[in-house]
Image 1 (cartoon, rainbow over the protein chains, first blue to last red):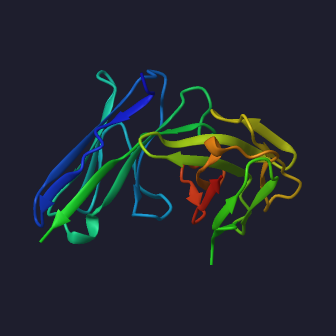
Image 2 (cartoon, helix red, strand yellow; image 1 turned 90 degrees about the vertical axis):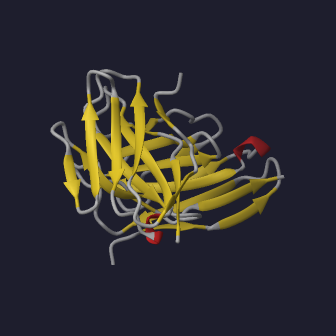
Length: 112
Length: 112
């Protein structure tokens, strides 16, 4: 079983839609969680950290469920520019930030 | 401008011909890391370095070497490349106490 698992998608949604991605992780000792965004043929960039109480950044909301070991990303009012691959990232549990485990990504395509 | 710079960006080589991918960052970050990205597998960590002269293996170190003689540079060395090392490689750095990785633009390597 992979340490971090994501639905690869693609999620094809119209502009203005709300879309949610889930990501499950296997190491119950993991303490740090992030969502990164990767545009086609580009480098990943941090979208947002995920905090225990959940957090919001504009149209983006991240949630953590420790009991079920998953994190989620909700995007409201999708824009064409949101089309990208979203990577779930979890620390390995034993290495602080030194060993971050990346999911394979969920691809989002927003169409007019 | 804060950045991580990798070279070369694209390289086609043949089995067994030693090559080096350079990585340099101008943010005075202590931590640097190399990843490879393959379809369906996400980013996998090859090696990381917590500071000058301090390096450690990631999840897929076989066939690679690294060195950290200066804080800003972290080259990745393939002593005898093989076709299974054909991949997209990313170098990344991060500041102390943060989980945000700053990635280079990537180096696409093909080994024939």
